[in-house]
Length: 173
Image (cartoon, rainbow, N blue to C red; front, side):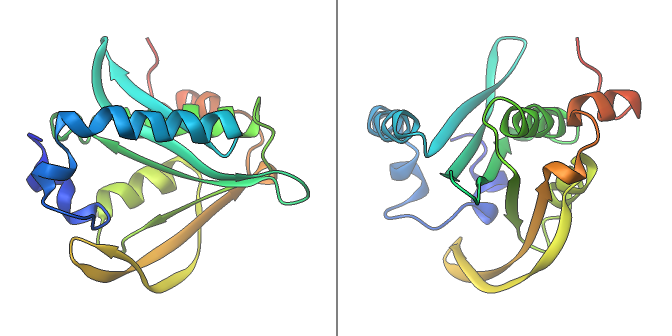
């Protein structure tokens, strides 16, 4: 709730006001839906914590098995930790989980072209731009273009985390 001004421009439009959609009373139902999708194997909802405090969320969704073996990944981090490498570290850990234990071949994400901070996070971990999705998603009350970025196992010679640590982009404690 405290990061409404920071997050709302990037979040999909939902029913009702920001306050109503993000009120604590809605979390039990959301958590139940996330657990159901996780049990089905189609989603992996994760919490981002820093020093034991909840600071964001990373979600791996639309997990498809068979010959495609793909998913999308999305994330958000609290405003007070923006620019500190938290999103980059969380995304790298999530990708290593996707390409390791989950056994995926491809992971993709979408980002609004004007979201420079999120684009930097995606490119820092190794995503490549694959195209522009016109009027792709209703965000903050209007249909918005998004860039599609992707990564496959062939793009990852070592784990994403190891590469970022070696390059000095992420420090793990």
